Image (cartoon, rainbow, N blue to C red):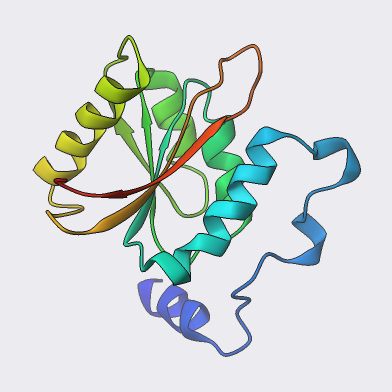
Length: 149
C-alpha cells in the first residue's frame, strides 16, 4: 500500500495547486480563507519549512489543508477530540498543545513543542496562523516566524 501511495504522490499528474473543485466558494469567504490563501502564497517566497496553525475547533487547519501547501501543516490544539479528528485530514499533523492566555505565550509554547518534537529547528522559518474563537470559526492572525528568534 505504501508503494501505491508513494507512486501516486510523486505522479506528474498530482495537483500541486488547490483543485478548482475545493476552491473557496462565495459562501466560504472569510478571515480563515483569506489567511489560508496568504499562507499558501507565502510558502515559496518565505522559504518556510512548515505552517503552524493554532486551532480550538480544527476549522482553520482544515481550511489551510484545502490549499494543499507544499510544506507540512502542524495543527496545535488543546482538545484531544479535535486532535483525533484532524488526524484524518489531508496534510495535517495534529499536536496537543495547552491553551495559553494570549498570543505571544501561545506562539512561544507552540514553538517549544515543535522544536522538542524535532519537527522544526532553530533558524527554520514557519508561517503561523492563530486567533479567532470557536464562535467565529476563523483565524485572524498570520505571522512569518524564524524559530528561535
